[in-house]
Structure formats: structure tokens, C-alpha cells
Amino acid sequence: MENFKVDLVYLWVDGSDPEWQKKRSMYIPASTHTLPIEAVCEARYTNNDELRYSLRSIEKYANWVRKIFIVTDNQVPLWLDISNPKIKIIDINEILPSEALPCFNSEVIEYFLYKIPDLSEHFIYANDDMFLNKNVLPSDFFGDDGFPVVRLKRKRFGYLRYKLKYVFRSTNSAYKKTHIRASDEVYKRLKKRYWGFSHHNIDAYCKSDYKMAIENIFSDIIAKTMLNHIRSKTGLQRIAILYYALAVKHGHICYTGQKQSLAVQLYKMQKLYNNLTSDTMFFCLNDDQNSSSADRIAARLFLENRFPYKSEFEI
Image (cartoon, rainbow, N blue to C red):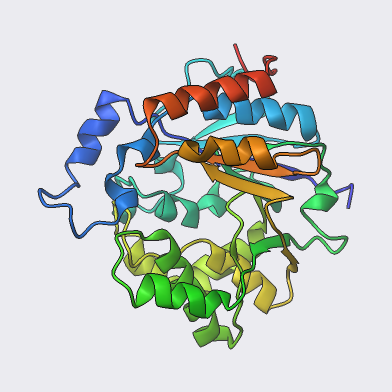
């Protein structure tokens, strides 16, 4: 296991960039009521400088990472030291098919991460609001056979519960609907059903299985959904790639709870204070339409206190 090279991939966007806003506005219809909240909520594109602190957590707790690829849309964080040999900026134009461009849909961008030049076979993937909280090893992400540890949340009557709540009931959120679709598609194609949903923290992948899932298993869906320049309720969440890995016995399922993997919305910061312990491996601070400026300030202060020292990735 220790001989594996493991890379880290991030998606990052500065939603305050006027040029990016101008491009995106061309794909937002005048009436947005049919769009999922993820497509129109500005908070989901707000740059709270989380990437800076996520990288600090990686340097502190996972310095064995070989390379760090940051996928952006013609943007670079001003504070990032791009001369660092471990850092590589990847523009979405390098990896997305031309028909998918321009793209303001992170779900679609995620489909093509396996096309990043020089990406290792074994890689972990994070949003910029995901952080490590303790020392981790490659063996926390991959088994001795090289297959990823697939961390899922499991709730009683999980699939049925989510299906009743998010599919048969009207909702403007796409996140759980696209999870349901991923579970349904894997069952339809591979006759396997997985009841756990994403733990919404750092995940591990094998590039070869990622490619197989996108180019073969789900190729018909990808061909359609990659045309969604803005987030859609009919997308396919990347959890489908991990369900596929499990279905073909190329993954190790690991059901996890908030003691190990904690994900909270910024407006529920008290939950973080109450539940973050030395046993917590990951935590995620998710900004959304319910968060206020005060919530964002509180989160920034927490991160600065938790990771006060500049990393080697900062100018």
C-alpha cells in the first residue's frame, strides 16, 4: 500500500469574479423556478478562502500526497504559490469536451477528472470546503489491493426514505435526487443496490474505474447530462462511480457517521463545535442559501484558529 502514489484533486471557483459571473449569467434563464437551488444560490459559489485552509490541513495531516491538482475555470487564487512543484492548476477547458463548455455545473466537471494529465491511478477528491482533522495514511483511503475505501452514510430505510422524500415529493434541491438516480442506474445496469449516500467529504477513486464508469457504464447518461451547463435535477451524481466500483468488487464499503466524517452547514456552526473531536477524520463546512455574513465570518475565524500557520502552498 505504501508504494502507491496518491494525488489530490480539488474543484475551486471564485464566484465573485465579474468575468465568471458575466459568463454564467448568460445561462441563467429569466425565470429560475424550475432550476434546483444549487444552480441559482450565489452562496454556493462564494469564495470564503476555504481552499487555503483545506490545503493547510492537507500539509499538516497528509503530507504524503504526491501532487495536488486544482481544477478551475480560468482562475487562480491570488495567494496560491503556483511555482510549488506539488501544485498544478488545471483549466476545465483541458479536460471537458467542447460541447460541455462553458460549464458552471460542478457535477459535469467531476465526470471528467480522470482526464487530468499526469493524474495518478489512485487519487482522492475534495471540494474546497472539506478538511482533514487528524493524521491520515493512504491506507485510510485504499485497501491493500489498491481499491478505494467507499465511505457512505447509512440511515434506516435509507433508499426508500430518500425516494419518498426527494423524488415523490416536490423539492427544488437536486442533490438527493441525483443520488437516487445514481442508485437506480447502478441497479438497472448491474443489479446492485446501495443504501448509503455520500458522506460529503473527501473520497477516494481509481482512475481506471472512473474512466470505465464514465466512458462505458454510464456513457449514454453522461452524453446527455454533460450538456447541462447549469446544475440540473436530472444529473448523475459522482457517487455512481463509487457504487459501480462496489458493484464490480473494486471497492471496500465503509459506513460512517458524524463521529468520523462531519458535514455541517455554516448556519449550524454550533453542531461543529459540539461534535468535532480528536476522532473526527474529516469535516466539511458547507455554505448555502441559509447562511449569513455573520456565519461566514464565524467559519473563517474557526478555520484561522484551527489552521493558523501558512502552508508551503501559499505565497
